Length: 226
Ligand code: DX5
Ligand code: ZN
Image 1 (cartoon, helix red, strand yellow):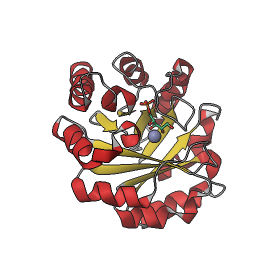
Image 2 (spheres, protein in one colour):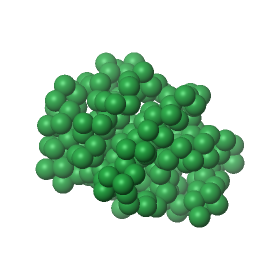
Image 3 (cartoon, rainbow, N blue to C red):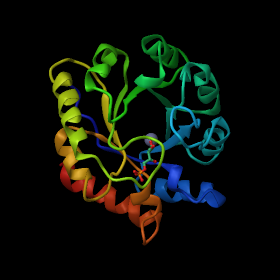
Image 4 (cartoon, protein in one colour):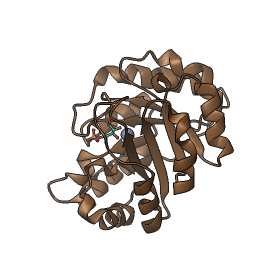
């Protein structure tokens, strides 16, 4: 297994969209590694959020890796649009993709890194058959749809399992957690084996601003990661 750098991926779902460019620059200047973009269709999840237009807008303001998380039914219909908009990575849900294997291959053919995500109610085994096609495995630590929900500690067991599958496998797959990540919960996810951390509320709703939110999580990763 490759030792990965620990990455912080602020989710713009909780950003102030009246000043999205400024918000992205703030997190980029203070230690964000990726920009996480949550795409919701009102079908796969109850909420509706953003589409390729916002990905293209993010691409205009940053060179950071754009990590597009598709919480949409049948994502194969849209991966080309998101790749064209400037996504670096596209993550799809196993529950939403009847042809998961084929769609992951298609994401790579479009020149993007491929990710697969599992909801809290989905057995972790769903990731196993496609591990070899993944750049990122995403274990959801809340039910997708909204930011600001409580971290589900029972998901840590899934993180441990995926990490154990990767040990000695020669696979080079990032292990991402998304949902309820804060200075309180990040250490548990890290010690379970996660290496890539998404956070919306803890960054963009930090009482002292997004710069402080980013710095605090970044510092924590530095402290715990070495
Ligand atoms: C949940 C999204 C998350 C969300 C995280 O549906 O996939 O990326 O923005 O928000 P927090 O960090 O507030 O739980
Ligand atoms: Zn997400």
